[in-house]
Amino acid sequence: MSAVVAVPRRLQFAIDKLGVLIAAIATVASFLPFAAFRANRIVLGESKSIFAALPAWEATLLVLALFAAIAIALFRTPTLWRLWTSLVVLAILFIAVGHAASFLTPEGDRIARVSPGAGFWLLIFAFALLAADAIARLKLRPWTRIGALVGVAIFFAVLLGSGTLNDLSILREYFNRGDTFWREAQTHLALALGSLAAATVAGIPIGILCHRSDALRAPVLNVLNAIQTVPSIALFGLLIAPLAWVAANIPSASALGISGIGAAPAMVALFAYSLLPVVANTVVGLDNVPPAANDAAKGMGMTDRQRLLTVEFPLAFPVILTGIRIVLVQNIGLATIAALIGGGGFGVFVFQGVGQTAMDLVLLGAVPTVALAFAAAVVLDSIVEMVSPKDMRRD
Image (cartoon, rainbow, N blue to C red; front, side, top):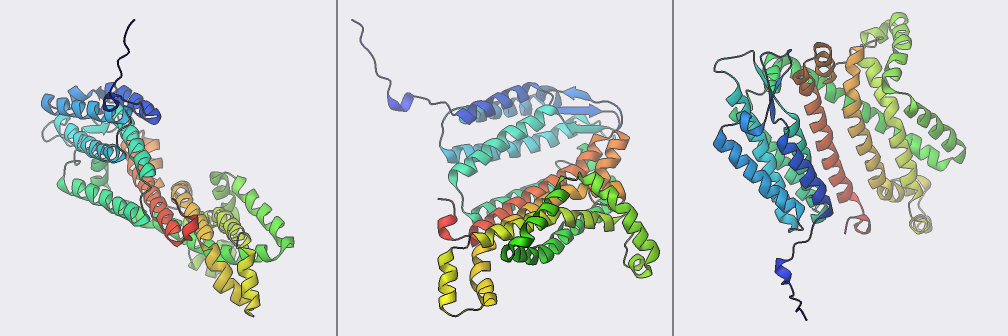
């Protein structure tokens, strides 16, 4: 009769379900091209593996770090280990791709281009997913999340300032267009924030009216829903003719910068897209105010206006702020399309890059757009949680 030997608990390794996916993606990505070398910005690139893109010793260290990180992701390791592992590996990957650009670029060559390869982007995705999962499991407090975002921003500021990434093609495109880049960045922010401000000023009163009047609620929300179904490019195009007529027939409108193309139709379109989330969330927030709070306010002799300003609106504010968060993230992305009608913004680089088959120029517009949207989402999510009642916050 054979004896059953019990395995000590500390020697048992449990597999993490999400870790299996992360490990699979990272493993596949390790065999894909880490960087691509091109003789100039137009020609097709030559794919380079990790060992071809980096000095042997640096490539070996990177592979060992990836192997260790994959093992930590695969098994049910402590959440803090997973978070720090993902952050360290992400930092190493960005430093390594900068070194790969310097290693592959011939001395003094200002024409050659080195871009991150598919393997690099998949590795970034895999370990960003690991970091996001760890942050969700840790249930970090709002200020901690904002602090982490600031830390990431400082890391990239130091990395960019050190010159480590200077030989990457996206940075070379930036150096060629530095003044234009910051001008379009201001335009992009003006479109996103300006349309948000206008939608907030107009949308909250409309939402209050819809909450107060059932006769208004359905027609207003149906119209705003219909606007949301119109593709963004089509809406930008539809606004060209009426705004051109306004500019041609109303001299003061032209003096204010209103025209058929440019920032005006872009701002109007973004404003139209922004109204539904603000109005709908205002209605939902006010609808969810506990009846007992309103009854208590009535019992104290408060007028409708006093109840709205001191009871209903403060209780509904977290839901309204959620709508504002949706609008800001949405508009940062949609503002990119404004470049198609001369509205400016980061879309200028995206569409120039598409037209010239220069993917690094596309990235020059896409990367800051994604970074802005991500930062806005983190900050506003944290603010929403801070202003929410304690019983509505995460456990």
